[in-house]
Amino acid sequence: MPPKERTIRFHICLTPEEKEQVRRMAEENSLTMAELFRAKTIKHRLPRRVTKVAGETYWELGKIGDNLNQIAKAINTSVLMGEPVVVDRALLEEVRNLVRQVRREITEVDLITDLQDEED
Image (cartoon, rainbow, N blue to C red; front, top):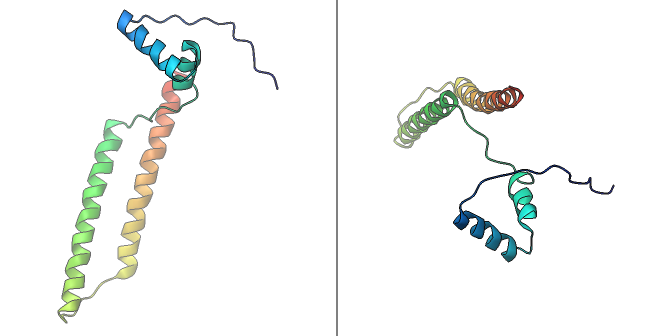
């Protein structure tokens, strides 16, 4: 399928130094400035924004995970010392799965939020 004809012009303002930098980057990559612009903006995905709440929640979940690791280390140490340890492994695994699920849901909420922001 042949490429569509580009008929829309897009105007941006740059300082002379910025324009020279763009010109050099384009030249170094054997591109026109327009091709460089398209390559750097349209063809590459930008990092997804993370909401403040999602970022804070993700951070807190990481700290909870650290605490779980410390508990596991204490249990392992007790076992090595021959001390009896009662662990509900099913409950521990359930907690791990819940933490993973919440982390996944946080990223999905961010994606939905981003999509809604784009529609507005």
